[in-house]
Image 1 (cartoon, rainbow, N blue to C red):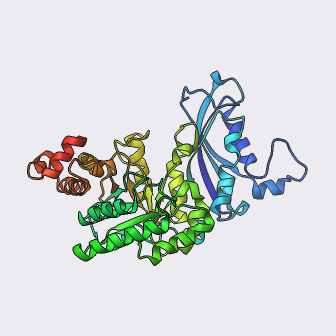
Image 2 (cartoon, one colour):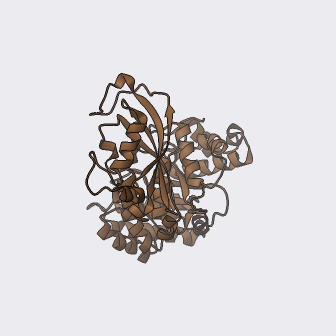
Image 3 (cartoon, rainbow, N blue to C red):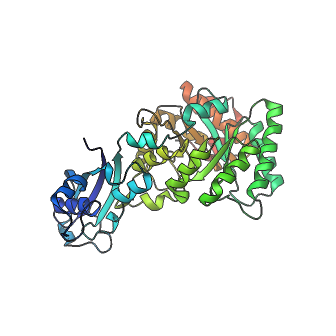
Length: 415
């Protein structure tokens, strides 16, 4: 029996839906815009993608993408499933995307097209081992067997000299934080090269651990050309660092998979630039599809955004993203959802109530660093708020005996 990849799209077109779905299937497999001599019936039987279903949806009312064919006043919208024979491209993520996405976004026949989801055969599990650490491995490294993992991002994002970075990391580590990460804007800049940043941070963390007995994870941003990823990883590992970070979209799935094959450390997957692929409801890639690919390629942690975030996504979209990352893939591939963007202590009860799990890494940048009495107080307030949420305790009640939380709620508000 032929193994298949099912790709699920949302399309809108001024042409007949079944005709457009058939064009999509042919364009991305054995066909082109005209019949050709060697596209025999036997070849099509073995290699042509097949339209599995066309489910009509209400029209969106949106204008078409540039270059769309037909009279848009007659536009129709549908959810289309197409089955691609795996033997056309094999269990390869780059070639998978060439097949199921490829030129589809440029077809005149569609005025909107978005890849919503992928159903993949187990051949991909054989080819891609996925995250090496995931939720359980990260908890073990953090010595945090339960409850949410509380983290932050270095702020200001760029520009801190070495001595100020060391002081900030020391304050955060001494406060009991679980996780710190470079901002995605901090790569290997001349003012503070990666090698110097790694040295400064690992020394500060170790001095704190000697005092406190706890060693938080610090995710060093090693995003770079693929040819530099292994060396950057080794620089972190050899200095005693315990986590690396990459921007999944900018290094690509092949870069992430390359790093996964080499890495001895957890890989923190940032989604910087993902909005370019996803923000328009008419075009691109839904997070549900993206997260499957990132998990296969080896992301141990993956940013999903958080509720009431500072970006464009609604709470419903964020919750769908978190649920997607938590859903088993081939029975495993346990990637840790990372809640970020505009997070603060006042969101803890609502977040926990909506997400329904503490298996999350909650990152607060301004919500920690912007605490009026300093980042350490911000960390304590975040921890206290989440402890209250898990205990079913009202934040205002806890704030009566917790001045750090009281100040945080006054400063950032509550949901």
